[in-house]
Image (cartoon, rainbow, N blue to C red; front, side, top):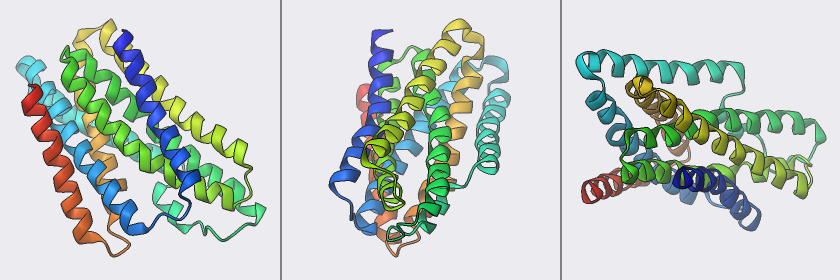
Length: 250
């Protein structure tokens, strides 16, 4: 339980760390951001497949494939519904950093809320990973999610400051989005701890949410600023780093 709690804090703290970097480096180039985000996407993609979906099949028993496929689509559908309820994260790019009018505050806060809501299932994925009993693999999954949270924390700072949100409040809001991830991690862990019967579905569900985020959010975002080739290779590097780590720790 201690390791789960430390992991939860680490996953949520990654968003806060990214936010601090956002305060320090306010004018990060799109190219650098795209490469870092693509690397994170590769890590998450590998973590989803190797750390969540494959174990789901292993633990699924007689109906493993049915449970896993159903769980993947259930996770993706969950985030798809959330996207319809809150502003899509891609619209963050539509917020002009130079615009200081207070009228932008509400829209920016909605974007931040969207990130916070997406952080919940990501946190659940980190927590569910511990349900398999493979602590090393669970830490790799959590590490992949934490790595993705750093650039995510960075990108929310500029728009909030540009829209007139005070520095202190901006920091607290960023911290709140990280706290959501901590809560999600603990929820995921306790869910599979209460009943191991839900573990195969929970693993696949978490994997589905991560696949959805990578495909619907991260890859499109890194291919809209002219850095597609670098972003693609960064994704491959991230995937292979996770693959090698999984084999060595396995």
